[in-house]
Image: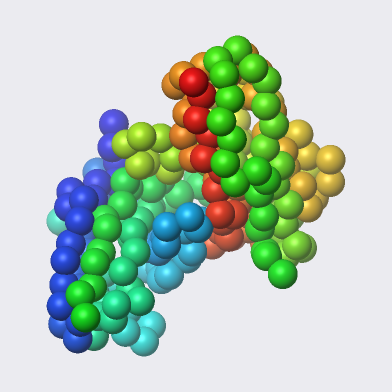
Length: 112
Length: 114
């Protein structure tokens, strides 16, 4: 039962353009959402998060949008850079549970 | 100065063997975790220790036994390895259980069972 879904296994974007990575969830108890970035042969690293009381959080080139009614969040990277090429994991935490549930990741490739 | 380190990075072994993976964090965190990333790429929590005490034990075969000699270390011992145990195992840590969402991950150990 996949409670966090990243339906696009891969995404290819030109350098300088916007990258949009999508994530859907099914558990209405999720109240905190995160994005992790993972390079090959490394562990995931925390990128950005958003609480369910907000609908947008921005950190430099990275912005996460949350649409609770649609149970959907997205990560926008503007402008995309080749160094952003990595696997991006969406994760969500339900209130009362400390451990996030991860999606299976989307591989982003940014072409020079 | 690696924050969360795991050894070995790669582990190839035969079915039925017993093996251990070691994890150390130098961040001064109170909470450590083991995750398994299976062939479908999902990261799934296996165990969590807070101040050397087991606090989360997901549905994992009892062939898997975590051991935390101190707050900075969380080792994973696997008995009677099976083909289905082949995966990448990640260790992680967080400042405390309340801040579990901001976890720092090790580089992973790729286990291949032949």
